[in-house]
Every structure is written in structure tokens, then in C-alpha cells.
Image (cartoon, rainbow, N blue to C red):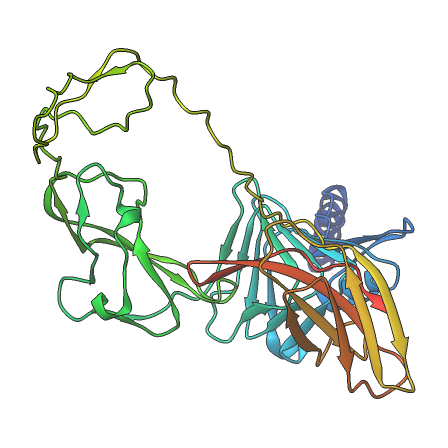
Amino acid sequence: MGIRTGRLRGILLLAALLSAACCFFQSVPAEAETVPFCYETERGKQGETDSFIEAVDMCKKYGGTLTVKGDQNVIGRDYGGFIYLPHNVTVIVPAGVCFTLKGVELWMEGTARVMGILDASDPESRVSGSGALVTEYGGRFRRHIPYIEKTGELCLRGEDIESGQPLSRSAVVPERVYWKSSVEGVWSFAQQELIPEPGTGTYDVTFTPADLRLNEPVTLPQCGQVTVREKKVPPDTGNTPDIPDSGIGITKPAQEPGGEKEDKREPVVITRMVSKPSLIYRRVKVFSKRRIRLQKLKRKRKAHRAYVKWAPAAGARAYEIQYAKTRSMKRAKKKRTGKNNITIKGLSGNTYYFRVRAYQQKNRRRTFTKWSSIWKG
């Protein structure tokens, strides 16, 4: 009887402990599960999802904004190694957030605003396309760091300059570059505005890759050599320059009558200063990166050609026209012209999409404007 009573008491005590534990865990609030991506379309529809491509699909019909919440990794095998961002979709990476691409190519026709970190430094990742990638408020876009083969301590030797001139006057030609990079790019001195002291010295060098969306610029310290020579000042001989005799304010000593002319010229004395000539100002056209505006599109389907005209851009060297059979501009063809109109021939099919942008070329580098709106013809 005593043994049964003890067992019963033990069972009741265990049940009481389990009941108290359940009440305690029910009183502790569960942490809210964060969803990595949230979207908002132009029509006001909002939502959250854990798939990046699903958030893009929700915005691409009417356009919208996609925001990355918290540090996220987009892995290529989950998306087939390729993600397409349409022209009417904007991706926002807020401050303090790291959005990492691993083994995936992000083809951008839209816009990416990076206030945190967009990491595409993985060897199998890249960001391409004609969209706009904007880093603001301390944002960072990490890319591949090109490999540079260093042969010796000296990277390059710039051309000699005179004292008082900045390093930007020292040109860097390929024949004077000794180190080799794994990608194409331009070598230059990092501090272009620096005015060095006379003599031979070494200064920081920057390698700027041709494709800045795939590779990051690299700064190499104290490996570029420049020789600065003293500026030669012509000596002041004290001679007064010859001034033609205009008969106003100029007197010459009288010549004796009947005397022979001497080869040596007599000194000229200036008795009145002539006013300075007026300054001539030259109008300079400043190149702007604003979007080009299309003005006319005329399609002749039977002749298999199209005529495109746009507003000219100030300071532009030439224009680049892109046309394709799809609005996403996949497999698009390009043509260049120096005029603000073009006739494109050999168009087969019913519908084509056209857009144009201008560019300016300086020091073998091209600066493009934004693409114009896409016209259908």
C-alpha cells in the first residue's frame, strides 16, 4: 500500500512539472521570422517573399521597387546561374545590408541603388547589362580584383615634366609600362593634381580596368617614376621689341640729310601705352549624361528598313543605336553614327524595338549617357 502511494505521488509531481514548463514556454513570445525580400509595385501592391526571382516577377509587369532585408546570399544553382532585372524594376540594398552574388550573373536593364554592399567578387559572378548601378551614402560595389604580374620594383615610367606642372601632364604610354594585368585597362598616376618637386621620384599608380562592372580599380603605392626638371626661363636681355611705326605716340631720332642708311636699327622709344586688346571668349559645349529623347520613328516593313531620329546631345562625339525583336533587348544589334538620325536596313519581321544613347570619348575612354526610352516600330 505504501509503495503504491509513493508511485502515485511521483506521477502527480511529474505531471505538475510538465504543466508548469508548458505554461512557461507559451508565455515566451516567438521571434518573428524575417522574410529576405519585400516588393512594392507601381500600382501599390505590396508583399514579401523568400525568393529574389519571385519578387522580380511580381514587379516586372507594371514596374516597382524591390528591397533586400538583411544580409542575403543569392546562389547560382538556385536560379540557374542567371537573373534578369527588367528596365522598370529598381533594387534597393539599404545601409548595413550585404547582398552577395555567388555563381550567378545579374543582367541589369533596370536600376540598382546600393547604400550597403553589393558583393560580386566571386570568380563565377558578374553584373552586366546596360542598366544603372548607383552607389550612394557610403555604399560599396565589390568586384573582381584583377591579377597584376609584377616584374621588378618599378611599375611604369612617365614622361618628363617641368617644375610647377602636375602629374597629369606626365603621359603614360604602353611602351613604358612594365607590369602586366590579367585584364585590359588604363594605367595612370593616382594623384593627378599633385605637383612634385624637381628631381626623380616615385608616386602611386592606379590601374583602371576597361570593364568597371566586372573588375575593381587597383592602386599600387610608390611604383611609378617621373623626372621633374627645372623650368627654363629665357634670360632678360633688356632689349625693347621692335614696334612698327604707326605715327601715334612713337618718336624716332631724326636722320641726317644725305647720310647713308645703316644696317643697324635705331632704338624705338614708346611715349604712350596702347590699351590692351579685348578678351575673346570661346563657348564650350559641356557633355551631359542626361537621357536622349527620341523624336521620330518611321518603319517601312516592305522595304525592311526603319528611320530613327533623336534630339542631338551637346558635346557628344557620336551616338549608339540598339535594336532588337524583344523589349528586353536580348540579342540586340548596335549601330553607331555621328549624326542625330539613321536609316537601318535589313529588318526582317513585324516588330522591332529601338533605343539610343550618346557618348563622348576622352583619353581613349568613352562616357555614355543614359539609354533613351524604348520605341516600338
